Amino acid sequence: MSNMKTNMNNLEDILTSLNSKKLRVCVIGIGRIGLPTALSFAKSGLDTIGVDINENLVQNINCGNFPLKDEPGYQKIFDDVIKNKKFSATTNIEDAVPNSDLILLSLPTPMDENNIPDYSALRTVASKLSDILSPNSLVIVESTIEPGFIEDEMISIITKSERLTVKENFFIGVCPENANPGEILHDFTNLPRLVGSITPNITKIIKSIYNFVFSVELIEMPNCKTANAVKLTTNVFRDINIAFVSELSLMFEKLGIDTNQVLEAAKKKYNFQVHYPGAGVGGPCLPINSYQLLNTARRTGVKLDIIESGRKINEKMPDHVIDLTIDAFKESGTSLEGSNILILGISYKPDVKDVQLTPAEHIIKKLKNLGVNVHIYDPYFSSTKKFDIKISESFSLELLEKMNATIIVTAHEEFTKINISKFSKMKTPILIDTRGIVDPVDAQNSQLIFRGLGRG
Ligand SMILES: NC(=O)c1ccc[n+]([C@@H]2O[C@H](COP(=O)([O-])OP(=O)(O)OC[C@H]3O[C@@H](n4cnc5c(N)ncnc54)[C@H](O)[C@@H]3O)[C@@H](O)[C@H]2O)c1
Image 1 (cartoon, rainbow, N blue to C red):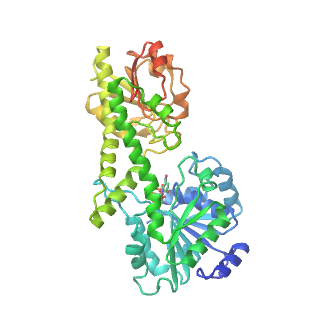
Image 2: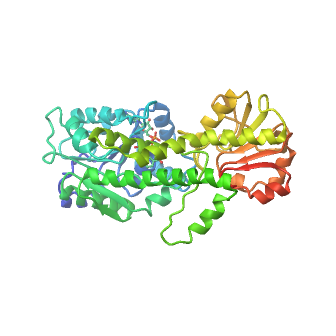
Image 3: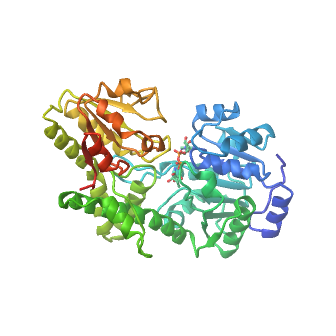
C-alpha cells in the first residue's frame, strides 16, 4: 500500500487518488454485505483491506476460501483480487485503519431478545476509531441504522478523544446497503443507492467514489438521517404489506378463496404492488428494520400502530402453520403426538443459506413441544445440524416413506420442481404448503390431505 494520505474533503485530491488507484480502502465487518463490498472496491483496482473480529473468517479468506458460496458471480472476483493482492483480511484494526483513507462500516445491527436494536458493534468500532482514525479520513456507514444515529451518537463517539473535529479533519456519511442476499452482485450493479452526509461537498465525494466502483444511480439525500429513513421506509413497507396479505389470507382460507388467485388478479392493477403471505418473515433485515423504526418512535414519543400490528401478525403466522397441521392430522384420524414430520426448507427465504430469525425455528419448536419427531431437509444445510436436528442429506423416497406429514416452509427452487404425487408415499399423506407453491388441484389428484396457507 502507498503511504500517501488522500485528503478526503478534497474532491480533486480524491479523483486523482482514484484514477491512480492510490486511494486506500478499509472495510470493517466483512460478512454477507461487507465482503462483497470490499471485493467490489478491490476489483476496481483499489487496495482494500477487510477487518473482522471473526478469526476463522479472516484466516479462511486469506487462505483463498471464499465463504459466500450462495452469492453467484463472486467466486471469480474473489479469486482474482486475492491473487493480485488487491484484497486481504485482518483482525488487526489498529494496523488497518490508520493506513486507510476511506473506512466503510458494514457492521451488524441485530436486536436483542426483547426486540431492542443492538448497535454495540458500531459503538465499539466508533470508539476505537476515535483513537486510531487518521486525520482527514472519511467514514461511510453502510449498516442499517435508525435515522439520527449518526448525528446523535456516532459523531460524538468518534470525536470524543478531541483529536478529530467533524467537518474539519474528520468526515462521515452514509450509503445504506440495500442488496438482497443471494443476488448481491446483481443488486450492487443495478440498484440505486442513497447517499447522505454531513456536508454537500462530502455527499458529492461519496457519490464520486461509489460511481467509480459501482456505476449505479446515486440518490443525493440532504443528510444522513434522511438517507437512513428512506432505507428503513422501503423495507418496513414490505414487512407491513406481507402482514397485510397474511392477515387477509387467514380470512380468505375461511371463505374458501384462494389468496394466490386474488393476488395474481390484483397485481394486474397498475398501482397494486404484490406481496405474498407465508409462514412468517425472518432474515437480518425486515423484522429488525420494523423494530428499529419502533425504537425511533419510542425515542421521539410517537406511536407507530401499523408497524406494531404488522409485526404482531407476522410473528403469529408460524402458529397458523401449526393450526393447519393439527387440522390435517384430525382429518387423517392419526395422532400428531409421536408422528414424524418433515420440514422442507429452514432458510428464511428461498435459495439462500441463512436461518437468521427464520420462522422455521418457531414451527420446529412448537412441533417438538407437541411431541412430534421433527426431520429437516434443506439443500443449503444438508448433513449439517440445525436447531438440534441432523439435516437429511437428500430429499429421497426412503425419507418420505418414514413421514406422516411434510411442511413446506421455504420455497427453495428445488422444492418447486418436486412431483407432488411423491408425497402420497408418506405413511399418512399430509402435505402443508406455507408458500403457495403447490397447486391444490395437483394435491387433490394425488389424494393428499392438503392444507395450503391462505388457499381456501
Ligand atoms: N444481509 C442483508 O441482507 C443485508 C442487506 C442490506 C443491509 N444489511 C445491513 O448490513 C449490515 C451488515 O449486515 P450483514 O448481513 O453483512 O451482517 P453479517 O453478520 O453477515 O456480517 C457482519 C460482520 O461483522 C463482523 N463484526 C461484528 N462485530 C465486529 C467488530 N466489532 N469489529 C469488526 N467486525 C465485526 C462479524 O464478525 C461479521 O463477519 C447490517 O446493518 C445489516 O442490517 C444487511
